[in-house]
Image (cartoon, rainbow, N blue to C red; front, side, top):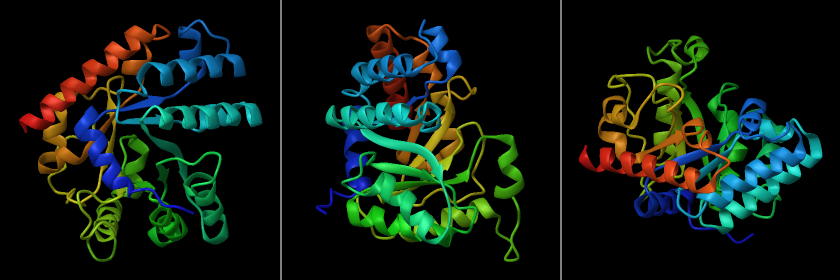
Length: 281
């Protein structure tokens, strides 16, 4: 297997050249309806193709939500495969939002599904859940390193329910979210210009100055747009680590479809606003 450049290297370059914006591809039923599409495979395919054609040549990252494709079975997964391939061919990096997490051979199989260079669903990075213990992610970490891919590990998520796990305090006095950040900092130690192992940290969480977000890796930040956060909030949440933030916008861009020009314009506006905020911080 011929490895790509490390994901962190490719992501840093894409963020510098295109701006640090990630656009989600979230074809849920209500959004399909807003676009005048049926909630079926044909609607799914039209939606996904339109988003990829509109923005894959201009944004740093596209993030398809696997569940919205999987619900249509094998035909939906086939649409996902095509969307990933076309997005990457247009120059966008693809983060597969699948939040996989398991142990042993099962985790290895999940890793092979999304991180093996020859897999039909090969993506530049994968979201994973560490809540069977960070060490359970070992097979995914190893394969990501081998293939030049990356991971985004759930650390401090924006959903209210996450706090009961992520804010739980361990016997050493450090909470679980901070522990995940420390593991990622260790994975990325010495990497330049950016490590390949990132954290998911919600942009809606407010001041996170009590956490060490300097993990020498990317911070995938959902919550911009429909969830209430704005680009202007990013420096207050992420502080000195804001340059490594990859803000995710889904509905804020997608609601402008199915008009491809409107989708492009919305993505460009968010990318420019985020770039301005980051470079001014």
